[in-house]
Image (cartoon, rainbow, N blue to C red):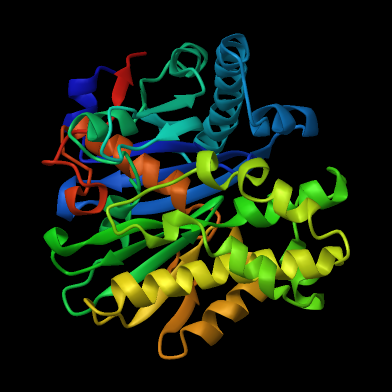
Length: 385
């Protein structure tokens, strides 16, 4: 089926693919989409995660890659994305639906947003040509560069999907996604009033601290149990919250270049060997929570009457982090996106399926107020089948 025929369809089925900065695996969402723009309606049919091997995860997490490694990883990751797509196509067959296209965010190996100089760029790998070749379907990918070409940060991009999923005429809500990086979207009734930005580190810092402290034996603080046992190291917390990113005003975005464990944590952790692992993890978790709370109080609360905070991403399962957020925002109802029919771990894969639909339909899907772009643009590139 050609792209014109897909555009003309009333209902489209898509697979959204995402590899987050935590490098856990390929997240894949099979969705049904009707319409485009404000009239778009989405239903999640199935979500699956296809984990990476420990060795492949370590390669993706490497703080430095040469050109040859980026080149080969691009193709290897493309194969993994294709394998995930093929498994989701089997699900589609079981569900009696025919997939029209695949939308792949890929995996970000570098994101350098503009900061008043000429140095900027973004690079996502996971070769879309391989996905298209293996599945026989058109693939939408490479969503960030067009927003950056229009003067934007290229991130965050999920606010458009947040608006599609959560906008109501009678209320304003905030959507918080705690993935590797934490980002917040203030979903207002009016599209032009949406505010969104990266608050700073999320699981990237907590997981990274656990990997460094255990020399790779443990990859994460499951349920926040280590943080719950530890005591906060005050001087370490002060150091973590002194990062210059927290003082910048939106529009702003960040990534591994500023908050990767090797950059943000390694030297500071090495200087505090007299404290326990639990104390370190408690401190890093507190820093993540404080950075979110402070960003909310500084940039959101003064401008918007927010009724609730809807949390998604892997951080929604960290009970200690969630408890800190509720304590720090006592006047806001903090809820998991699961309560609204959006599984916490599926939000980003769903978001890119929505963005891919808008690319196919020719509908601009950036949020200029969030990214700083000069005007709305159609995101993404299409690799035909």
